[in-house]
Length: 180
Image 1 (cartoon, rainbow, N blue to C red):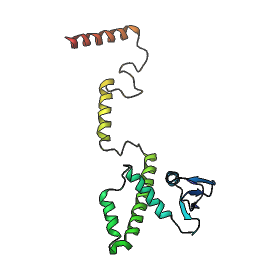
Image 2 (spheres, helix red, strand yellow):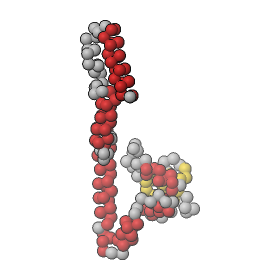
Image 3 (cartoon, helix red, strand yellow):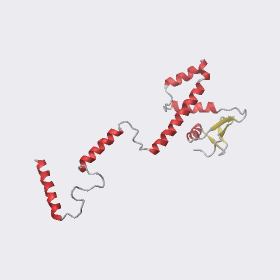
Image 4 (cartoon, one colour):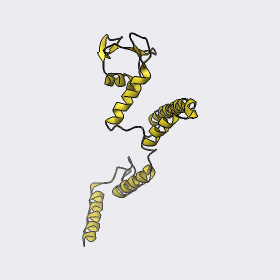
């Protein structure tokens, strides 16, 4: 996140070139989009008139992304936006959109916080079933042993070699019967 709450001032010269006043260099629309993605607020003003052009340039950035196939706004939303400019709903739409995006940002923040607190896979549909299948598979493969447990009859550690050989022979006999 940015270290300052002050918007980055971009000045537009008569040549339509955009000038970053913090770094004293010219920037493109893509640079401005990058600043915004990094969490920085920007303000774009006309050098000569002092008019705030921020809205115009932000709309241009959105239009360029949409024209390149990076569709974020569904057609019905774009259509409703156009309609809102020609109806009495114009006064309500900005507040509605602002509130909607505020709720979206808040829910994203809560989601990220919760992801750090719990298993990130737990919220995925079907995760519990997949976890149960994995546990059943491991149980079948290990004969029901839990991690850190020992084979029944070996807890004392005092079995002699002949007992182990006998058990191995019994297992081999069972395996050979299964092959038949």
